[in-house]
Amino acid sequence: MDWKEVFFQVFGGLGLFLMGMKFMSDGIQKAAGDGLRKTLSLLTINRYVAIFVGFFVTAIIQSSSATTVMVVGFVNAGMMTLVQAIGIILGANIGTTATGWLVVLPIVKYGLPIIGLGVLLRFVSKRMSLKYIGEILFGLGILFLGMTTMSEGFKPLRDDPGFISFFTLVSGSDYLHILLGVAIGTLTTVVVQSSSATIGIAIALASQGLLNFEGAASLVLGDNIGTTITALLASVGANYHAKRAAIAHTCFNVLGVIVILIFFYPFAHLVDSIVPGMPDLVDSNGGKPHIGTHIAMFHSMFNITNVVIFSFLIGFLAKVVTFIIPEPKEKEKKGAFRFTHIHYGLIDTPAIGIAESEKELVAMAERVKKNGVRVQAILSGERSTDDVIKKIEENENLIDEYRKMITSFLLSLSQKSLSESDSHIVGNYITAAANLEKFGDYLVNIAIQYRNFINSGLTLSAQGKSELTNLLARNMDYYERAVKALEGDIVDVNEFLKKAETEKKDIKKEIREIKFAHFNRLKEGTCKEEASLAFVEMLTNLDGMASQVHNIAEISSGHKFWS
Image 1 (cartoon, rainbow, N blue to C red):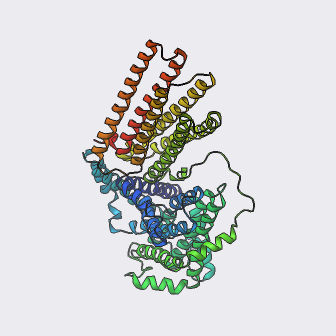
Image 2: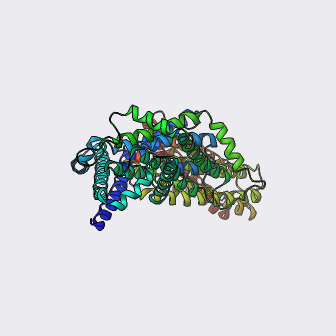
């Protein structure tokens, strides 16, 4: 037996399998981008909807580990409760069983023609929806090819006495051998960092007659423990809420394995009675044609059974992990600036990352609005200029951090495989962050110019003060409507854009008229030259604010990426 050939085929097949999953996941995410974003909005309804969300997202991204890492990030950011997180984790465990069923389909042997069809659709189709289907088919074909290659690589091992004797240890003949299988399954999943890959390996080995059904089932149980390691690693350095979510994932999977281990043989017999064909029947080629379906069914029934059991115990599980990870006696120290909604665990799920970055833009916009209210208080004389400007400048530093971090996150997101519309949205949100920061800069400029104006002993005429105050109020009203639209609150897009364009023109026209009238007063000597310069600079900043709001309005309405 050529061990080098065996290694190349198995290792290469595993690589194709994982890459196929990646291509297929990217294609599905592009096709279902809006669906993922809408699904995320269901999170707060109840625990059963959370289970569905976990199932749906995991079935799309083909990785329960990625889903749980994402959940840990959400909990760490404070945008998800522990109970909701546990619900999603339960659903994710069902969603991850989809891959097992894919690789036992009869069409698995048609990987090459599926790849060809996928490439044809991707490069020949004019419609983007067909291009995405092409990417999904291409990934599916690569996954099938990887599975076939891996299975063929294992075939020569059927005649190797040493390899056969090793896998007799994973025979499932008694509880000692079952526990050994659980340990090997756990270790394999930790190494390859993919529960789906471990299931694929188990099916490939079993299909070649190297594993019996009970032995493969024990690997499946270990696989469910090994997949929790990723979430535990993601919680390192996170707050105690995130650690609780990661521990909940581990507790659920480990307790689920323990429950099934108690009833292992009756449970395996139940699966066997449901699935047609004898799992360990060997055909004329030395393979086991029915065992793959049995393994996929065992994986699904194991996870569905645990979800049914633990869905009634979510509250209890939350209390258990709260006991394991108690709230720290001292409040956690605040570190550097941190997002509320987005984190880098979302990078591998662009559709959700985009939805959450939109929330951060709205949060950034709220900070800008606070500064607008403060500048209005300064101009109206309601508050002390120096005290308010200090708060404005502190808030402006946070606004700058928002822009920097949102841009950095979105640039990282843009390097992922995105649909055409999502690519436009990412670009426009980067622009929106810049527009919000610039609008905030104009507010700071006006505040500082007014402070310098007052500290120099200058005064504005009643008319000039009224003009500045009214223009700032108009700009802020205009700004609030544009930001509200960013949250999706637009009934008629065309009407909204028409009003936004008209408002910008009206504000700029009013500024020109005020400047013209001001220059006439300057000629007549009713205004001081020193006061005139500061007044005109403030008007210029108000003019710039209107331009920034119009850009935000276009992005909010989706106008900038219309075809």
